[in-house]
Image (cartoon, rainbow, N blue to C red; front, side, top):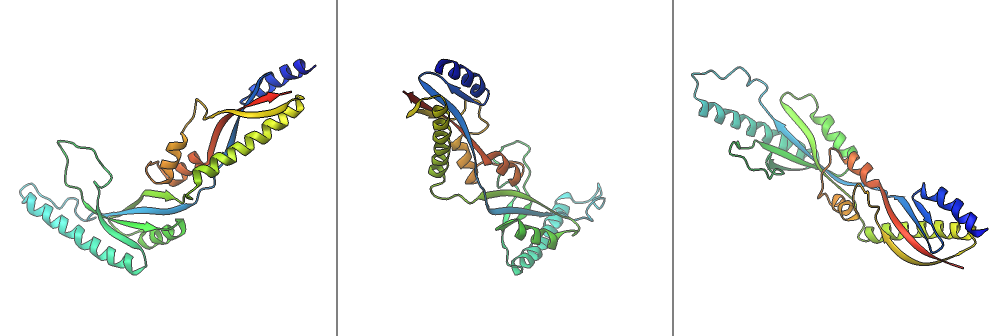
Length: 230
């Protein structure tokens, strides 16, 4: 009778990333990790909207470049003071700051402004303040999630408790007792390992948007194998 029940469970539970045999039960559990944005880094660049068509072939190119650089510096200085007056943390940076690529054709990178916003609401206030200004471009270039010091322990403990509870229920239905934990590992076909997950929380991995990073990191899975006893 127990053998027939085990065979039925094996067919049903293997499809749900679970395996039940006479010796052990193995199952995969997934937990949802709450993530809160700690800060967003926004970059502003400015280019002279009236510069197109001004340069002539017989003009002094170096002089033209110096004039353009001076215009950019002047505009960024004004913007920096205005943004600081609004209570934002702002600093000067270079467009090459996050780029570690070398090329024989590298050109000097234009100066930019980097602004730190503590959340999306503060960032929305900045964007609304800057929106519609000629020559001004902006985009999110970095972010960090708030990570508790014991985040790794909390996550693994939560996954273990879920696995143990679920395995005990299945073992009881099979007329068995749940034994000790035999092994625990991440699924072989995983999108992101736990190490990569915590690197991402520290801002060491980049994605297209913080929302994309959050969605990808939110669900974590692990495989647990428990012994079965009579």
